[in-house]
Length: 123
Image (cartoon, rainbow, N blue to C red; front, side):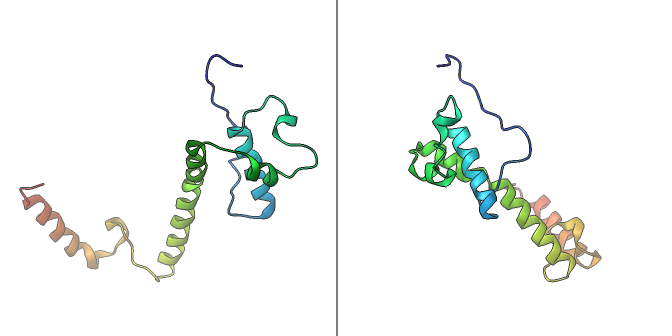
């Protein structure tokens, strides 16, 4: 056993995503087991007759580990939402959220808001 804690780092491409194809989901199970299940050799991770999902489903993870796993895909979900929003914005189906992306028609509203905020002593 190590006396100094270490952090595992997966080398190669980015982490697989659990919300994609079945093949990528199996890769995600494998990555989570590598990161969160104690092991010294590949045999400690799974038997040749087991799938990564079977081992993942039967492994007891701490609540903290489960929370980290849940949050690991948040960045990908945010990027997906950003990309979807950008496509809708370019198609004119939604209005821009940031002042710099809005046209001159909204500049008066932004100027009024800026002046109101500057004049608010509570801020």
